[in-house]
Image 1: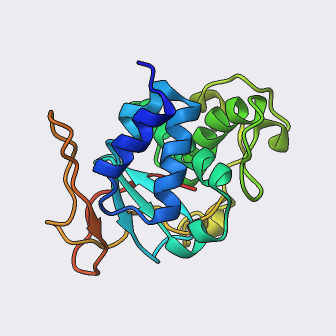
Image 2: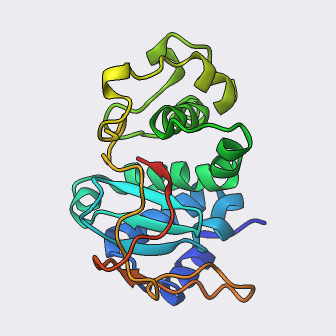
Length: 210
């Protein structure tokens, strides 16, 4: 499916609910850069929160984002990170983690990041900060998350049950506390809703923490 820039702007005007202006611009930019990602990008359910450092997604297609972090980065950097986050969902990383019986969320998240970021890096897209890349760990590009997971170093025993510190951003491996009525999965007609986080209940786990 191919979109013109004008189509994306028009669609963004209709579906901007819940998005900060800077993130809305990044979403349009990301959809323009990867038009085949556009339906997925516009299905994300925005959740503004200060409980994470940058961006993250969960299995319900909620996009958690930190307003301050987004404001401090360029449209191109935010667009790249949106493409990255959607990549976790489209590559079905959560289901693959469960199918492989993986319980080390942090190492799996890094492996998934490597699987996605090597492609983005090869395309010359600006990845903010110090992103996980295969070369950073002495690994070859082009492998799967499962292969990277096996090759990445396991956490030391003394830290195995400690806080899940992020390799690339948020220190949390679980979804922020949000209202159970705040977000909902995208429906057939594209109605995805939007919400602002509250500290009332915990739902599910993050697929990624960037």
